Amino acid sequence: MPKWAMVIDVDKCTGCGACVVGCKMENNVPIVDPVEAQNGRVMFWMDMMTTTEGTLPNTHTKRVPKPCFHCDDPPCTRVCPVGATYRNPEGLVAQIYHRCIGCRYCMAACPFTAKVYNWYDPKWIDGAEIGNPDVSRRMVGVVEKCSFCSHRLMKVKETADLEDRPITDGEYIPACAESCPAEAIIFGNIENTESDVYRLSRSYRVFRYGEGLGVEPKVYYLARRTDV
Amino acid sequence: MATLSPTSRKTLLFGGFGALFLLIAGYVALGPDDGLRQPLQYNHKIHVETAGLICTDCHQAVQISPSATIPQLETCSLCHSGEPISESPEERRLLEFVSNETEIPWKRVYRVPDHVYFSHRRHVTRGGLECVTCHGDVAEFTVPITAAVTPVTMKHCMDCHREHAVSNDCLTCHR
Image (cartoon, rainbow over all chains, first blue to last red; front, side, top):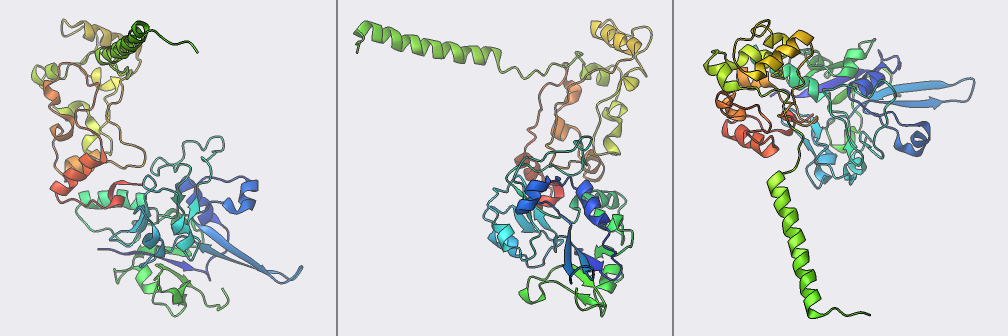
């Protein structure tokens, strides 16, 4: 059974935000109007954590992309009263929207604020109403989050299955990894010892957020710097 | 406050029941109007038995794509063009569609919700399922399909998956 994991090389990342846009487009993530965004209701599956240090003109901005970490021991799934979020055998932490009752316990439990809530029925800008037909639209009152583009896995699995072969390394990658111009996001099966993800997750530069929490995130960060 | 005499009370009571009965009888007799009326009285049986066609002759994409596809006019016109090949008045109507080059507005009957991924290719090619399993014995149908033979429900899908030891993980179908 494969176990899907991601490596984000912060040394390579330029902070351009292509992954954020790619993710929004791929997954039909609604664009929230500026007023509501100010109220903390902004919706991102792939979020760009941005901090600015120092005082003008001597400022220093740090940007780190943050998807859902698809923890191996996810705290969000433990608190869900209806089983709408669960960890599947391949290590993907799924969100089943039609089962979600919108209690937002999972949002409170997630140490990384990876989940977002649909406060309103999404409004689409002209021309974007159709969106990506491979991903369902979420309705008001449900929680959603990064799925590691599991709809892509469905298709890849089907093709590989029909050709009677295992999924090759790099065949299934999420939209963020595909759209990254710096190739800073690497995705694959961490159980496969020949995959790039396996190799990089054992790099001396590797670190994970929330290491002391025991949730075992499956998104590994690489950085030579120690201050990210 | 005015009080009703026993007779008028009885009239009111029976009148009420009568109206309710009429409503129910009317609903049962006429049925809910689901608006599903196919544009042509297509006869599957004739096409299979007399013309000797098989499902994939018209539903061509069933083995190669997620959707089985409702045949387009182009497929019909492979056999039906120019002179009618039967006595059927329905064929005459079809030939009108062909000569006008307007697509037949077939109504789709089987539909899964947008949060479900269903692939005909996988079920037919990999799973080896026959069309009959879900669509019933279409080869015996003399009238067009207006209602799903098998309920398109999650229970139905999951029961079959369980029976065939196929994964019932949510992410197998939900997206």
